[in-house]
Amino acid sequence: QVQLVESGGGLVQPGGSLRLSCAASGSIFSRYAMSWYRQAPGKEREFVAHIRSAGASTNYADSVKGRFTISRDNAKSTVYLQMNSLKPEDTAVYYCNANLRSYDYWGQGTQVTVSS
Image (cartoon, rainbow, N blue to C red):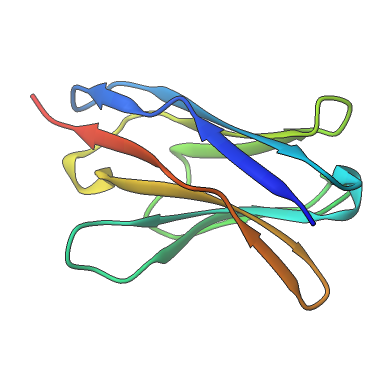
């Protein structure tokens, strides 16, 4: 079992930045691949970014490539999402996901609103 708690969301103007954090507990964090997903009102949840357990490999949705950076600190059992050059279409609830083989765990989400 893994418990995930996201933080760092909020209201930001277009062009601004936010850093989301996801703190994990309850299992060996370093074994899990970690991802961020988001869900905008009226839309399905979509993939944002992924980082492998060793942290050497990352991949991103095309819509955020070059603007968002995922990273992890295994010593702190935390994964981050640095979001720069934010756009109104980035507005969504952002969810943290931990995956190990067939096991998937989700956090409760943190709201990000990009608006002037």
